Length: 255
Ligand SMILES: [Zn+2]
Image (cartoon, rainbow, N blue to C red; front, side, top):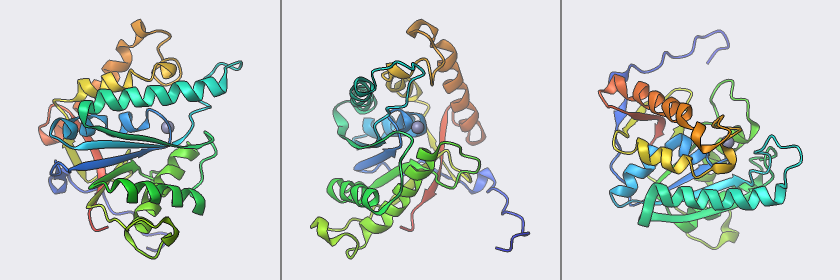
């Protein structure tokens, strides 16, 4: 498009798609522990309750997720892995699948060839029907790991689906049926999460190390404003579609 050509207006909500068929398995790829729950926790919990196996892949070690200048950072990394596994269990119960960690340094994630290869390997091993991740094209997104994780998801899907990318894996290629990008720049799909906002919150609250930095609560008793913020946002997102609560995405199915 020419530089001075205006952007396409967002789709009217009437043109949005709603509620994908529940896949047999899903893989959510987040930059940090807790990103998956924020982005798609209600949707994943809903799918798990309907039988979908929910896998998590976390790209970085979360080692910068504290304001404590004297923090034990190796200890924080271990703690955050434990919290992510607990969040996965709370989201999906007995349908919780793998929780994998690429272990890249927090704040230094890159969609380089080696890291794309690592993501492709996970997609090919787990063979999810739907992949979910950050939208790398979200305007004015500040956190570099969120941009890089989004590119890793998109580049990873392209390479995972084609047999001549990374043949050294020795694993059959795999083409997911759909990609959902959360925090999308131009969303076009909504999931009704009326029944699972509470589950999403429960999973988010497993990230106890993030109460202060992300949820702005010095202790668990101070979490109520955070809960209200998440619930209010879910209500706002669902309202145009007559859902009591919603999560919205950019849906791509022509993968
Ligand atoms: Zn993050």
